[in-house]
Image 1 (tube, rainbow, N blue to C red):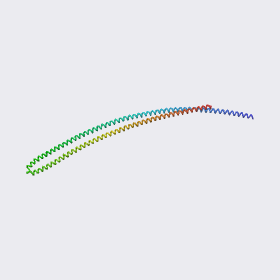
Image 2: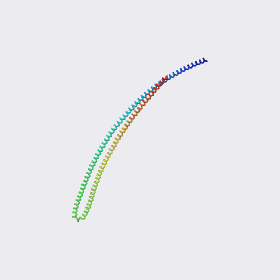
Image 3: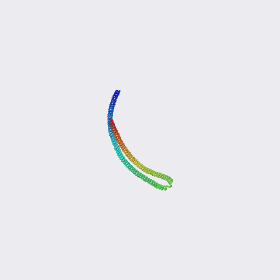
Image 4: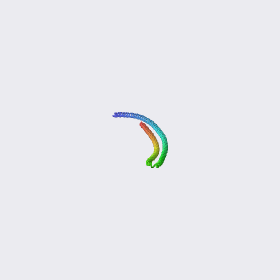
Length: 337
């Protein structure tokens, strides 16, 4: 009984030893596998860290290239803005120069036009003066003609009066002789003398009527000459008045034309001044826009630099954390080993 118990103890002891050895062997295998796993994990972490470092380096390189390209783009854009502003400034300067030349030409044109108006007005004044002189000479000649005509009428009337007076004197002498003859032959020729007296009386009456008609004709002729001369004077006066009104209207027209030219020139000067003011405001706005664009570009570049700096700082912190994690992992692996 004791032998069986001893055998069982021995066998149990052997089984326990085998179990412990098997357990130790399994633990060794497990530790070896764990060590291989840790080593593989470390290699994988190293490769991952190396790849992450390569990725970060490549990302930084791409960011650096992108920043260089962005800087080149901003520089090119600023150069383009500078060239555009320079061209705009040259265009504004050329426009101002053209406006100045146009204003000078306009001033010369207005001066020449005023000189032409002055010469035209002077010629018109000379023409009116010459016309008035011709009208004065014509009126003078007409007055001389009317005076001569009146003098001729006066001489004709005087001659006619002398003719009538002579005729009357002849008639008186003839009548006196006839009366003497009649007185001599009064008795004998009384009836004949009476008839002769009646005939003479009738002849005198006829002569008187004829003289009255001739005097009325002369009076009517003089009145007609007077009315004609009065009409001629009225016509000359009306012509002078029309010439004066025409000259006044011409002066008013020239004055109004000069006023219109002055207003036109003033408006042109106001337009040029307003155009220059608009050009100045446009240039000011363009300068402010370029300044704002430059400020915006500066802020954008500053933000880009801040973003790159923050990205680099984040990358540095990430790499530092990764290095700390790898160091801690290695420390844990070292402690575990």
